[in-house]
Length: 181
Image 1: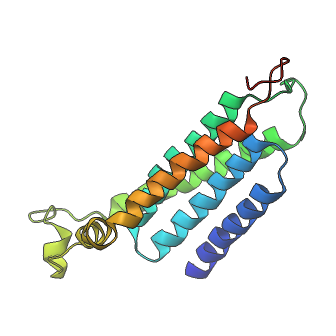
Image 2: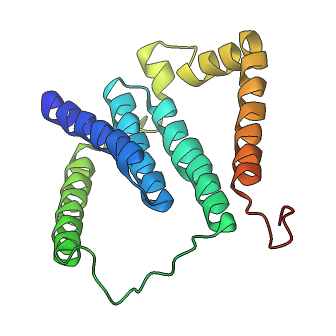
Image 3: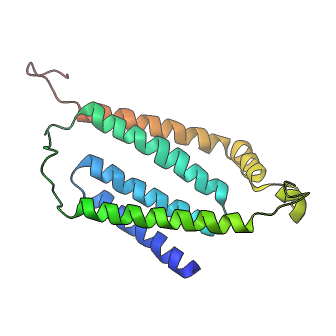
C-alpha cells in the first residue's frame, strides 16, 4: 500500500509541477502549484512528519498560494470568461465521480478508525510518554528553526515580500499618458 500511495503522491507532484510551467493562465498555474504542494504534504505524511505536512498545507497551500492568487486577482485578468461555456465538457461529470470516490474513501477511513480507537482508562495518555520519547518532534523543529536558523527563516519572509512587490511593480501597465498607473 505504501508504494501505491507514494506513486500517487509522486504523480501529483510531477503533474502539478508540469502544470505550473506549461499553463498560460496564471490562476490555473497557481492551482497546479496547490496540487504540487498537497502531493508533497502526502509524502511528508508517509515519512511520519505530520507537523511538516500540516505546515505544508496550512502555510504554503493555504497562505502563500492564496497570496499569489490575491496578487493575480489584484492585477486583474484582462479577459472575461463566459461561465456558460464549458472548456472541458467532461469535467463536471468527472468531478462528481471523483467527489463520490473521495467521500467513499472518507467514510471508509472514519469507520475503520472508529474500530481502532483505544477505549478505557488511560486511553488519553500522551503518546510521547507511552513511547518513551520525552522530546517531541515539534520541539526539535522549533529549537532548530528559531535557534540556529532564525536568520534564514527571517530572510525567507523578506524574500517572499520582495517577490510579491516585484510582481506588482513589474506587471503594472502604463496609463495613456505614459506614466505608471
